[in-house]
Amino acid sequence: MIKVKNLYHSYSNDTNYSVEDINFEVEKGEIFGFLGPSGAGKSTTQKILIGLLPLQKGEASISDYNIRSPKEELFNLIGVSFEHPNVYRKLSGLENLEFYRKMFSVKTEDPMKLLRMVGLENAAKKKADGYSKGMLQRLVFVRSMINNPKIWFLDEPTSGLDPNSASEIKKVIKEKNKEGATIFLTTHNMYIADELCDRIAFINEGKIELIDSPRNLKLKYGEKLIKVEYKENGKLKKESFSMVNDKDREMLNSLISTGKIETMHSQEATLEEIFIKVTGRGLK
Ligand SMILES: Nc1ncnc2c1ncn2[C@@H]1O[C@H](COP(=O)(O)OP(=O)(O)OP(=O)(O)O)[C@@H](O)[C@H]1O
Ligand SMILES: [Mg+2]
Image (cartoon, rainbow, N blue to C red):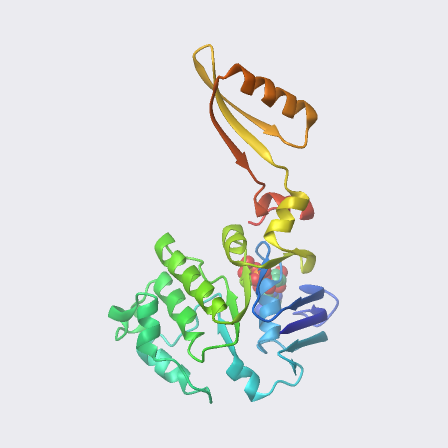
């Protein structure tokens, strides 16, 4: 559905690249995540794919449309939720959606239905100027659904949202994906990537370090730990044991045989821990 080959981009039109030799393919119906810290090149890649930045070097296509010479039909197929909410502040939420839907030459969704979906029905007639950050974020999110996109670009869709709204947004993303939408999601939030994505690309300093499913990443790079709480001389103690270390396994076995264990949990490595292992830096 999305194919990217040897993609480079320099904001200064020289060899100072913000993204460098990016290669990946997104299958139809997949949720593909771009996970990386601030400045990694996530939004730059998305902006090139949606035609907001010119394709300087490399190849990219979306649903067999070459993005070097994009056709209008392509824009009817895609939806884009931007990192920074770019709405008309003097228009209400409803007016923003009414205005936006006119740009498409395909059937569009009912704006009120979309606003209800993200809890903005009571603010529908209020000027966007008076919206909070989270409300604006939800408005650009539903705006990106107005043409019922087959390919959906989501740049940090839950940033700045409270846990309830974030979980509503995640639910909508999962539903749309079930209905067949292919999704390109960029984030520096490992929980979102882990929960939603079929495959994740780790991007750091403009380069993709690896691409795999969250499960495979954990199996390949994660060290399984068993966290144990036990009583010793009347005091509660905590210890973690690695399941890939013989000595740790022996110690855990002997602890189990004492019968003093109070709680025991297995813990997988988080995507951030794996990211650090692979790239040498965190996601902040
Ligand atoms: N308009 C611009 N002009 C010049 N440099 C830019 C511009 N936009 C981004 N950059 C630079 O390109 C690099 C990649 O930025 P980009 O916005 O793609 O990162 P990101 O991964 O989306 O980060 P974040 O998580 O903060 O959104 C950064 O070094 C950034 O400073
Ligand atoms: Mg960004």
